[in-house]
Image (cartoon, rainbow over the protein chains, first blue to last red):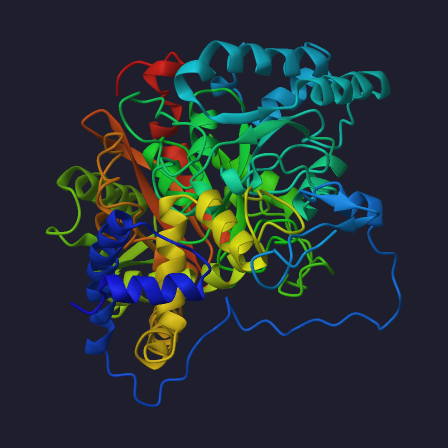
Length: 102
Length: 490
């Protein structure tokens, strides 16, 4: 078994997710099956084959470096879950918030 | 009046002759939705007030007789953002999200005076093949309410097949337009990657995603692609080629057209007998119409699902990092610090399938498995690409079934994600190669519709439409209606 509950724990922390023990067990089993399936690719000889990372060979398009009208700040803030004094409000960045004296 | 019996051109004629007004047409759409959507569950949001206002304006200015789409109602998959209209991607993460701008395709349909009537259900963030991954509701197949409508554009397909709207927009990352179109007996086009702007499409896998139309008839589909395609400075991957008329070649027939049928797409152990027999009959029809149909091979297509799930999940894991609870969308309560805010927001906001894809993508990209998984999948993608290119040096089109089975029971595959993934074997290679492909009705198996996939060269949607239209005119599968929409059992 390639994917264990420890693997799930590790990649979940990279992906900023958390799972309870029962979920971890289910996801580990499912992901292990899926990884087994994708390892079918090992049968392919890909020596000297370059990777394809784009839909088709389209070139990137650049516009002229000229200032354009942006989006209104007030409009952007409409969807923010919490706004204070025209800024997006978030919890304390460090620690458990205890030092966040107001 | 029944939309299922009418093409966009028929409706246009009625509007121009003032047999009906745009307002009456829109009122009729909402009557149909009210009557049927309790059973079907296609719509997440209705925009009746805005739609009626737009129809009244059109009635005052008059329908433009040179614009066949003027006043035609359209419904929109809920991962395409609509200014001022809630857009959820069927996720709790975006349950209350109201976009402040339009996707480019929305600007385009509105420039053509089409009338958006509402937003359609889907698998959360377009991940899934049955629409059962929606955080909000189940959508049912109008051919049999105990069956899935397919996915992820299941709401789009069900709304068209049930006769609620004449056209819907969907999105296709690995088959999400073609498979639901096949499951519900309608026409669904995934255009060439780059043909339609992705600006304002909530990203799933950016190198694979494309927006396309779902309709009852081939010509309707081409008319709508005319409206939504084109270069867009806001999507640097959009195609700079000229604005084509996709209906231009419809009447040209298929005489002399060379169609390849991959032997991998007719494997008896992998594909239901009822599907194979319908597709084989379609091959005979094409031959009788003068096409040259021959067996070809796509030897690496069996690696398509593996490569697709690694690449699409890796791109998804990256794209979905933006959902962090800060600037928009769901935010978890009762957290102590920023790290907790991220983790709790994402854990509570995403559904199981989305988490599974994020895990697979993060795993594939993580140190230790990047070369064995991500890089290997990108190389397999090149080989799949080359297989198609090789066939297209000798053939104009590739033909095969769209799906391995007909629509299955609701709940039938939810416990087994791997089985759900493997069912995508016939559609994902096309996305990996960036090619255009359309599913059209080609028969029935035990009363359920069967779809056939026509795959074209890059930016050659015209030949796909031409062959699809010729087949449609020669057969009557497209005239059959779902029993729920008043049709007889097939």
